[in-house]
Image (cartoon, rainbow over all chains, first blue to last red; front, side):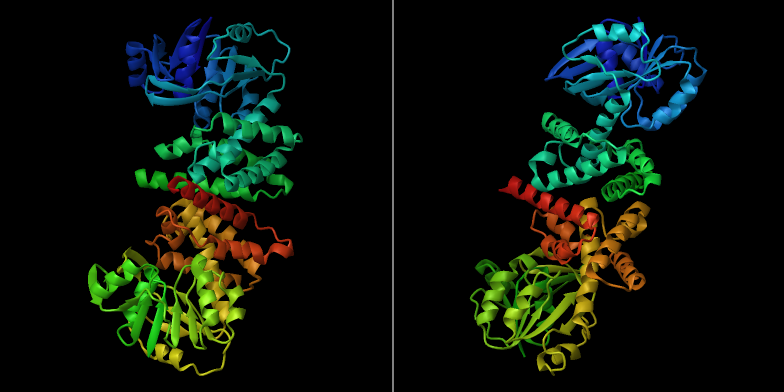
Length: 300
Length: 300
């Protein structure tokens, strides 16, 4: 099976590394230099201080011949990829974005078999061909527009069981994405604004109050019922990733753009016509946007 | 006229320096070493890069013989001072605290002539006997329990017109403190959590949204009507102190306790039985408290 992975950030590198063990992977990069370095030096994954190297084929020229394309670009880079996918012949496309920003575009891609995925791994890009696997999580997949189809590409992925790289199939993509969104919409902006690791949101009683207040707003906006279960889910993520800095916090530290629009921006948009009070979501949205603008001005 | 100043932080040092020019000032310190250093080396004020030195008498032993006592300790240090003042013979006591935390105690001090003051100076303590006068503001005074009395001590203070140290009398102490509280309750916690200078709250459009949202909550809690005028007031402070870091932001950077309880804690308490929505006040209160707890644990 040939797999094309589009986007060579931390997640793209991580998936290229693990999937290369059993498949022919082509990693599509955004810059020619990165493709050259990967072709020459391979991809290195660091886990528990140990380095492993795998040869991966990288491409800067976009041929996209593969029957399975995995889209691992950041939310704010999704639009040009959608334009390309619109014109490609029918195949399986797996989206791995955080947040919900890609969902409105999916109706434009109905000739493809769309699969949605969420990534629970901790991954930190060290350089253009090196990624640290900071936390083993799961990849959860769910069929978006082909619920009962036998998708041989996805079936194959599910059969492989690498102990550091488990992949699961979920019935309900909406539930799956909502759970991930709740975690992203609470843990990410709070750790970013407070400048703390994930664990402090449960260890510090004041921060835990904030987490709960924000959580209740988010599940209210998303119209979710099973509050008790979801609250346990969010708290467990904080516990299991206690020593990690959230991706948004890392983005802000590096002066990168965050995925705030696809996360809290999506929540605000969802509630737009429903007259819901969302003071914490609004507050955090503007805080993070303001910090982004500020960094942009300072750098620019 | 003999003046006793209790509390030798930035404000205590600044007032000792300027008032020493015309009065006999005794500055009461919390630690003997600080009194010794001030008695030996005087108080230095740095303004626009120029240092000026004045001899000031400092005391660690608390005699409190002076007929005018100026209380310039932080809000959270006020309670032991109140205990002392309860037992002192009748005199004029001027409180210069930020926030409202001292007001509940004033009924215990009705044998004194109480004067309330607010400080608009920017002052940064460099070391135990040196303070930088970072912004020239006004001192506003208002009689608390002796509205129409001729208070000769205060009258004298008002006569002196040092160009860097103007002192004004205000009719309505409640209005005066409310205005100061609004500024403190909005600019201080926002600059602290966002880690920005005061000016950014008006220069950054996202931060300005946050400032306005918080402002409307605060004036609602305090039951104030003249929104337009007060909003101009808050924005003007940001403009005039654009390059300054707020006292709360500085406290957090130094790992000191903040005055959050006397500021947002007071707002929360005011609204307790009135069923008002105060999401931003609540959010910022818990954020700052959590950061305080966190620093305390790390240092302790």
